Image 1: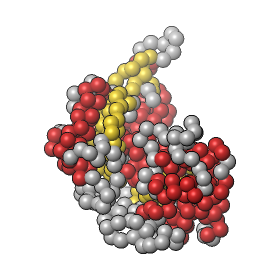
Image 2: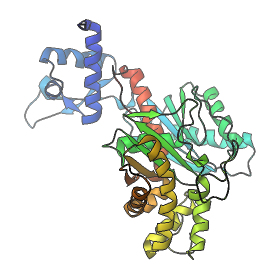
Image 3: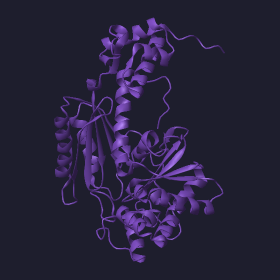
Image 4: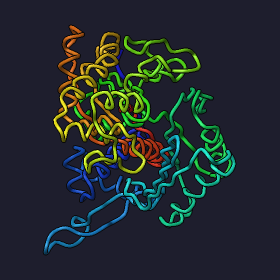
Length: 404
């Protein structure tokens, strides 16, 4: 059946969104350059630039050429200050926040420990105050969108579900932010956000299908298929910590992942494995010394690489490969990214060991890569998610969105 031509208003919206995307990705451009990149006529480009200026989305940011002056020399850019965004990375014992402009430039960033000694209300107040201070430091008068990354199950309504082992202040924090802020608060599982960041800016930029295996204090997985993040029927896709695997001495339950893959590859399990190979604690050497907020397992892996502790590294790779083999057998992603602080610390060498062991366990060819963004991927993914939502609201959602 023939497709009806787009109406003038629809065509204008499509052209405007295309121009805004190019200005975002390529940086400030002249009208002539926009004409070249879009394939639109000169009058059409002139009209859309004028329209975007009137809407407060585009402004003249300079001129090009040593001698040229006038309209053709004007360089246009997106008005970055049109909206401010915020993101929070909520961990078991800490919160990190960042505030950016519409283009994603970080204007303020801060983090604070939130220990288990605090009751729910004081913990929530500390986290909310950290965000308020960052907003003030950034000079943002009003937030447009806030992205939050948190461990645990996020249901289809964007609500953090009651999960075993998570402090009560996690769930209360999201509710308080939604009560206090005039901005939408978007909540997503931390591993899913890490996959978003690795897909856009990290190790999976050239892949539209992959699985990110999060290795940090706990373990998790995020599934990206055909360019789309897959959350599952209840939002629990990738809860690999509950995966029954050999070698744990037990089985997980609906309320506790003990006995699952968590007991092989979580930070506590990696520390026990290191002890068995005679590796010192994470504060013993500069290479092993844990960085602020990261799991001890990351420091131990760096120390093992520094000492060429092949026995420990092979045993750890064997464990990780068990989880990766289960994922590969079900999804055949072709690529597994070792994310989180421990995956990042292991780098290409640990990834290569896991790939070799995975090849012995599965007939499906699966490349294993080290994540490039480490623990910072969660905050970055939350910022990208908030930026996407804000730009879709201000610019108009693109006709076809294909991004995790």
